[in-house]
Image (cartoon, rainbow, N blue to C red; front, top):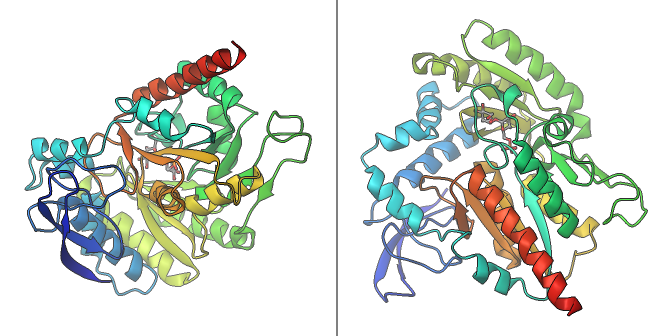
Length: 380
Ligand SMILES: O=P(O)(O)OC[C@H]1O[C@H](O[C@H]2O[C@H](CO)[C@@H](O)[C@H](O)[C@H]2O)[C@H](O)[C@@H](O)[C@@H]1O
């Protein structure tokens, strides 16, 4: 991993801003406004809080399977990914908000986004937890509101729409309950399109993609082992997401987080073909294959017939680290935009932000209204 300080000119003010570059990732400037696509910095020439968090996580990911990581660094990473710890860090809340402000609001910039999409086919990609449903303690009760479901249903009548989630596909389908959507579960490793006859499938069979199917028996084994290893840790919850496993520590007392880390590490050490990633108070174990939400997005665009098209405008909305793979793909393709759902500053490849699921709903409704208006105008 390379870690070098470089200086980049801020395109608006002409002032040079120090930037920390971590393995090619970009970090937004702390104070200066920036155009959505330019890279920036954590501020002040020092490594930012979010960059520190990223370093911890990368360290954890690199050492996850090899047994070299100390449990303390795992727990540090688990702490760093917790918003309560972000608040109590050396960076004040107002500074964090300042950073967040540098990522423009998708609602405030709605007209600008629509202008960029002019003449192109919008395709919608939506993460589930923390994007369509609020984050709650019990993962089995992360319901989306009726209003949100109605909005997503309307959205899907206007644009091809996919749900891209870390959850098992069947489970996320049970929450969303809209047959007309594409679903990519297990962080994109389990993709299925709408049934025959849907508006966008034109009578063809629903697409199915399961690039990690050979890992099914291994994941089942790992799930059982993790359940056994964490059963004495109050609040720990292991979720079988079919092609990956989530170990939740949201309801575990902080002093017991090391027990969760130990359990996951000991299992990972036995399975070199599996790797670790981290979400919101969750450790996730998944196959080492080169497949993620970004690849799922590309696969879905291809399935929809937009593989080499310049007239497609994908919009991906998500709140978590795993959504960054999709944001990055959009940035690299220079197509559409990523929208990060977050109230606090984060390293991101997204171009716009929304603060919470209610704002996501407002944004989706505005898209629907915009499309209807555009349709009416085209008939006049
Ligand atoms: O890709 P996503 O749809 O965002 O799924 C990522 C993980 O989401 C769920 O966990 C998160 O939400 C839970 C419910 O609000 C919360 O309790 C937990 O702390 C969060 O990490 C889901 O349970 C996981 O399996 C997904 O991988």
